[in-house]
Amino acid sequence: MSSVIRRTTTLGVSIAVMTIVSACDIFSPQDNQQSTKQRVIVEIPENIGGANAVANTTTNAFSLPSASMPLTERLNFSVGNSFFRNPWVTAPSSTTARDGLGPYFNTNACQNCHIKDGRGHLPASDDDNHVSLLVRLSIGPSSDPKHSVLTHPILGEQLQDMAIPGLEPEAKLSFKYQYQTQTLSGDEKVELRKPIAVIENTIYDAPLDNLQTSVRIAPAMIGLGYLAALSNEQILANADPDDLDKDGISGKANTVWNLATQSQDLGRFGWKAGQPNLKQQNASAFSGDMGLTSSIVAHDDCTQSQTDCTSAINGGSPEVSDKILDRVTFYTANLAVPLRRINDETTITAGAEIFQTIGCADCHKVSWQTPEVPDMPWLSNQTIYPFTDLLLHDMGEGLADHRSEFNASGTEWRTAPLWGIGLTSTVNSEFGFLHDGRARNLTEAIVWHGGEAQTSQQAFVNLPANERKQLLAFLNSL
Ligand SMILES: [Ca+2]
Ligand SMILES: [Ca+2]
Ligand SMILES: [Ca+2]
Image (cartoon, rainbow, N blue to C red; front, side, top):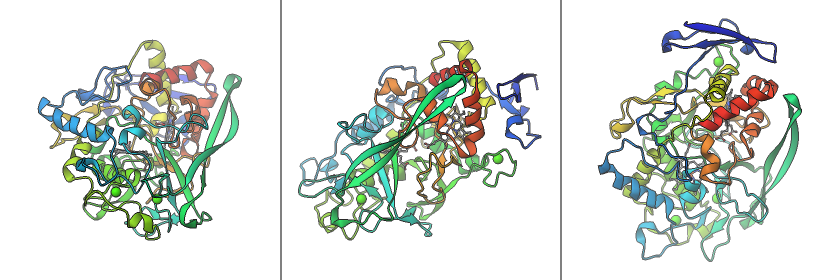
């Protein structure tokens, strides 16, 4: 251990801060108390996206291809981009490669939700639309390993509030909010809002008594090929479902159904890690969000009761060819991570240290090494800084959606990656943080943390105001 600096926070707790020379400096916690847990503080470089990072601070910051991708692959990327960006149309149509939208759908292009390859948001006002999010539905957990939930008998697994001409959409969706105020040290007041989905005018008199809903905004698309490349073993190495090391953090992997292999697999994509890989995630988006079938998900979100839906004309079987699904999947694996912007090094470095000292990095795992990636060698052997362990954590009652998804309970969420988060408002002026976009800024997002993150959240709330600013400056540099 090269140097150990002891300092005292306002919590009155002594925290050991270590400057690191090598990765083998790992220190195992001697004490069960999280407040005295000793953590290795790593230095975080400007390049958090390995050999494929890009230097861009414009509204296109999330839309650039992996920098080391060979020129010969650029065409695949741009074909994928066009099927991600351009609208799909209703069948029958002369543009047979992109028809078959609906019968029920949320919107007609991936990009309408993943705005500029970034995230979605809640409606900014009553007049604004709610296109860049979706509402998952269920009536209970499923005991069948093949199904994430017990689906609603009439409305299926997702609410689609759009329909092709001649059909009525499943319902009318709007939001109301519950507000509360939290006070941080220095008497800083933070107003928190929680969205509640209001579902009205449901078709086929669908009963809503046992309905469970989960509102989710579209997440940003950067660095996903790297996260897909990590091996299940790498991810499981950080899991501690029974918190055997008693540090208060019990990350667990979701176990989901892999449709291609017809077997259980580790979940890694989506806010509850409900999807095992990018191809299945994308096929599910085509089907659930846009009503487009593929070889992986060969059905729309039509239930047997929705006879209008089952009898509507389709755009071929499947509607999305394997070639297009593959190109879109290639695209989603190759959106580059932007370099950090370190404009005030002292402040940002101090913030990076606080981030690790108060336990944020216990879940937002700072760095990973990608293994060999045979089909995309430019993603191989890279040190990346996504700030996620890709595991599920109990985040407490405040963030709970009370809806399970495979092994993820109603209070569990996958640690959200934080790379690129400082460019969120540059990419799109409308945005929200956390799964349902409730947080209007990073402070709100952190204050919502509860459950396993409670100790860390409390430390944030109690930090002197200038240290909170340093932490936020660090997050904004990502
Ligand atoms: Ca269709
Ligand atoms: Ca539905
Ligand atoms: Ca633990």
